[in-house]
Image 1 (cartoon, rainbow, N blue to C red):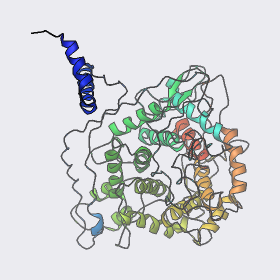
Image 2 (cartoon, one colour):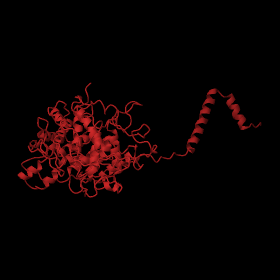
Image 3 (cartoon, rainbow, N blue to C red):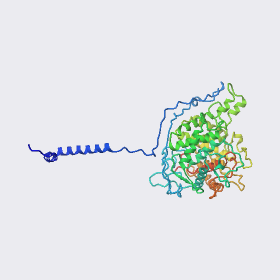
Length: 556
């Protein structure tokens, strides 16, 4: 029998086979080759930059603190406020991707800078209603912030810069330069970051650590207000030392310090609750969560909000709530256990002030916009107290309506006191809780504020950074360029004076670590020093874009 070579046999078979058989055979062979290649292909390695999210087992819920007994003749806490839900905490291990820094000579705010700030299109830290405004909602909350990325369509330029953009940038550099290694900002720590011949704070002053939590919160708010979150990749270049800081690391380290220093009850102060500390630290955490929706900040932010609500004073009428004071409600009630309050106790329990109340309202409003749990009765109580201390002529009292226009004494009484700061606080609280541009109190209050424009005075004793902040916020909201009442009648003169006041009081020394800070004290800087002064003035310089208009934006 004749023997045929195998190759010749296959070739002959294909030559004499129908075309369908040939096609099927070819496909089978191709599939087999691909399968062998896939099996032999090595597995790709994960990159180090991957963001890791590790969700641990649920933590057991914390037991609510035992509240002191309430006098039997008065139910001070409405039933709807007795239970405040706190989201279940989770453990998150997040790793921020590290990118190569840009040219060291290129700073943020310039075209070639690394502006890849993360954005969250539906979340804003604005105090306004979050809708209806002409800016800050259509393209996401960072469209108007000069150090964030362009918003809107590809290639669209960011909102035009403001007269104080350099003021903000220099102030943020100064804050980065004086941040502690653990992420905090402290009044006592300022001099530790200065050279011996160029101190930014008086070395003879003994600063206390009682306000570190509030100062750290305020410094963080200055960064958050410009659009920087813990995810931000922009670099800050220090022209003094040529050192670079990643903005996101500055923010992340500060936020972690606050989170690690939070007490079990949600407060932050070390020995006893001090509501300036609690409101500022909580506001920083709620804005950090609102900007990114990163759940790492969710649980501490909500616990801080829960504490603020429990600390709120009851309404003297026995129905609803009131404002806040330095001490928490829990601390006052603990002094009178087991029975009804006497007259002294009632006076202490119902005591509230407009200044602390303003900061607490800002924290609660930020929490509402960040979808955290806030009982409506808390904002209603703040509004009730604010309206009680407010007068028809636009003035407002610090503790009660009788004090409207009166001096609030302090350590540095040699500085001029600006009573219109209470009008500004009252305008802000009422605008941010009611959102009614036609509220009868608002225009008289705006008139009061505009009658006392920002100025440091020749000897510096007219400087009041706290007043400048709330006055700027109030008037920009009332008739600034994004208000439905955008006449500029009150905001225009104020804005012109504000630019001059901030630029003239900021330190401009390109060869010293003082550059960019506010080292000259004002009436209220005796506790926080240059950290307080610099942080609050940066916040003032950010009013142009930080908040959406509370009244829904300009009507065209």
